[in-house]
Image 1 (spheres, one colour):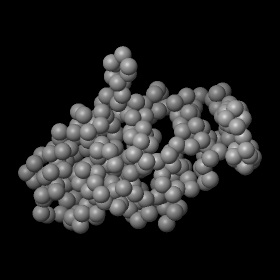
Image 2 (tube, helix red, strand yellow):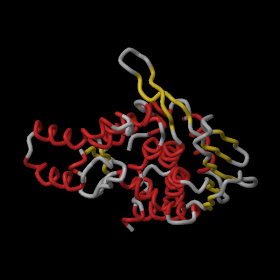
Image 3 (cartoon, one colour):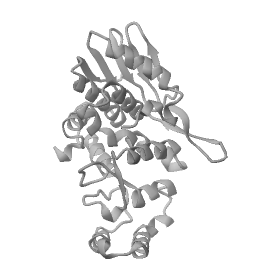
Image 4 (tube, helix red, strand yellow):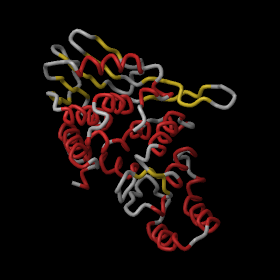
Length: 289
């Protein structure tokens, strides 16, 4: 896997995260992992916990809103805060906040900025802690889940999402497919798609040439053009750029929707723990347990 902390989106936060990783690797006591009992909180804790499990390092997980007080900890802060990561060495304490960073540099040299979420930062930490860890590798496709959930894709092009997705594709952690190529897909975020129409297109997809596929997919997605949502950027991802992990029968956007449903069933704390447990066990949302 490509080292995330050496890639363009992580340039501004890499020094802090590298120092934190070095300290946590050499720390003797248990590390407390804390986050709000939210979808972003669970998606941020999971990769770090995966790394600690792969290394056999002691830790505790807690979902609560209050700030930690004693001991060594990694604290996931909410999306409303955007100052980037903050680190104290004695004892090692790391707070992860969203950071606005340069995602891509255009051919003219202009930097395009976007959100580096706590989820992406957590995956970078996990990779640095346990680069060959089985659980860390299995969770790799979820690297971009924080950016998928961020509002940047609803307003404009998100260069960080694109940069991270390209890293995943280049290293072989995911592949990109069109909507008709996804065997098991959630359609609740594409209400303009008729299930029977999608099924018909999917069934004949292997027999269509490039022009036929373009025409069929454009026909499926056309009703979205008259809607206020989704944005053009998100519509392109939903129709043409579905992200699929190794041996997945579904795509990341569908898995995120399935994960989000846990919070509609009751306790936020229970939902957060259930999602992390599922991700650590299977690398997927709970449907796949």
